[in-house]
Length: 63
Image 1 (tube, rainbow, N blue to C red):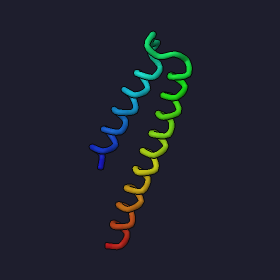
Image 2: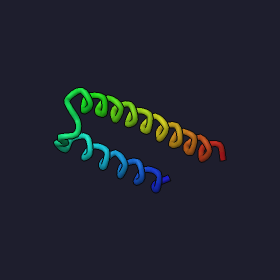
Image 3: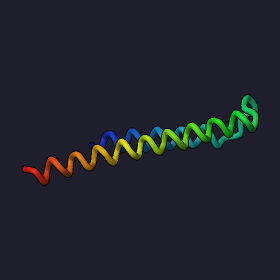
Image 4: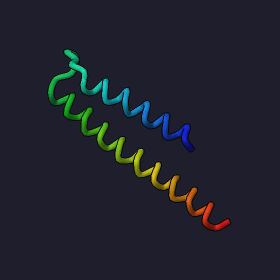
């Protein structure tokens, strides 16, 4: 499970760098769309991680 946490943190870090670095190819509207997409992706990732953690806790408690 720690591997998945590290993967998600790495992906989020790289995504944040890509979105926050100035890029002449993106106008402000494109940047806003990317930021919204990144925000939604982060929320979904956190929700999935929470579900996995909850499931692992349940498995351990039910032993």
